[in-house]
Image (cartoon, rainbow, N blue to C red; front, side, top):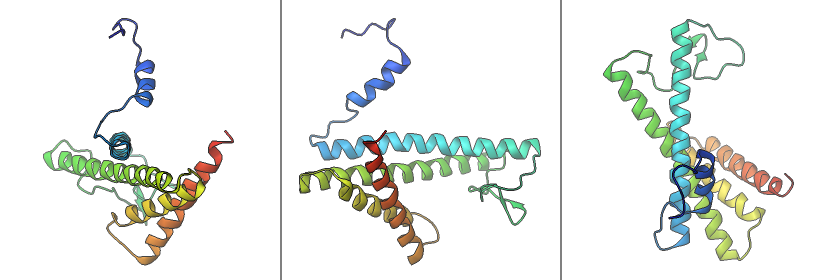
Length: 179
């Protein structure tokens, strides 16, 4: 290999991820889904851990939150976590809650990315064109899939998530050429 360990940089390695494949399952659709899932699951795990670290720091410092506070922190004047057993303590229950919450969050992020990338790839191949219609349908179906992973599933929530997913993915597709 022509890469010398002394000349490689962190940014060079990160840029290389976009050019090479993590997986080779023998079909581009499977490769696309798996790579999207793994990348997004990692981001979801980092996001979940950093959010819980923030909540722990807020509680540990005794800071009272008000106005513009996410619902996980304060609801009706009572502090709440997404993981109720995670309270900044160093016990096994707290660690289990962190691992469970991080796993759930990374699975949701990975599911969204895998479903979305698989659908956009499949629709592009089936229709022969990559346009906003593919991304709108993929975003709507991904929104429905994410709505079905929540604890309180309602018809309105499923429809809202489908519309939101379609709108965000279509906007992202249309804005790609502008910026």
